[in-house]
Image (tube, rainbow, N blue to C red; front, side, top):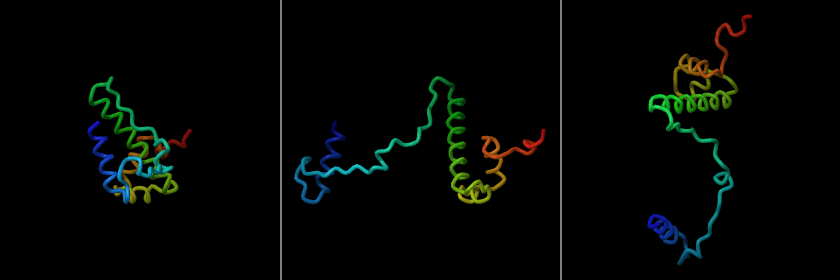
Length: 107
């Protein structure tokens, strides 16, 4: 409760012409009001190492997929944006099934 009071007091102090909470103008940014992408679920029912690996896997997959989408599937450009070696980026993308693995086209 004290923290909330401090935040309100600070908002009043920083708002031009405000003398109390009722004088504050509250604006909601539409983008901020939208629910964010699903957060990464932390599995406390797993041992630490397994839970950590699951979080890292989810992060890597989402991160790589977003970079590939923003770069129209261009691995070199996506790796450049991520500031990692292209070969390493390709290896990670293959691990997560985001790009074809050599031999996938063979019958």
